[in-house]
Amino acid sequence: MIKEIMTDASKRMQKTVEDLTREMGSIRTGRASVTLLDHVTVDYYGAPTPVSQVATLHVPEPTLITIQPWDHSQIHAIEKAILASDLGITPSNDGRIIRIPIPPLTQERRQTLAKHLGKIAEEHRTAIRQVRREANERLKKSLKDKTISEDDERRGLEETQKLTDSFIEKIDGLARQKEKEILEG
Image (cartoon, rainbow, N blue to C red; front, side, top):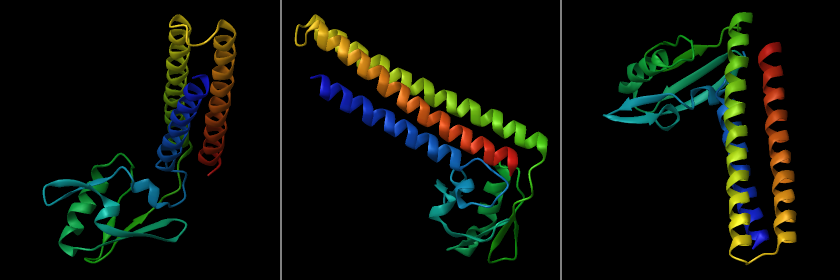
């Protein structure tokens, strides 16, 4: 019973860390990366569609992203979606390919991005704590239902705390690493 609760909690915490990694990939660091465009959606014949599903994305050099739409009639819709996003980048097109130069970040913008990263990391720490809370409630319910002993419950609670601490440490490490990338460029 305890092993089942711990396995479930561990899987859910791992998914939270994976989500954090995905979200951090979309934060600019001054270098070009196609993950910057993960949250940009294009109005593709009336349906909101991620840019990566309507075009080929490339990073030919560290400060440039190129987007080659599969359907050239969508080039203006893609350009409009990028301008409407909160990325603060300006695309240019030659009728076939959209080029997005990635300008170096100002110190003020770096500070803003670092704060945003801190908020994202805290949201994910909170999600980890919520998983811990739910696992602890399941352990207490199992004790109440007399399916585990008090000693098993105490061991389970300690194990849940250790698991929580390890995943929060992973989140902190990832956030520190990303913050260093943002602030140093």
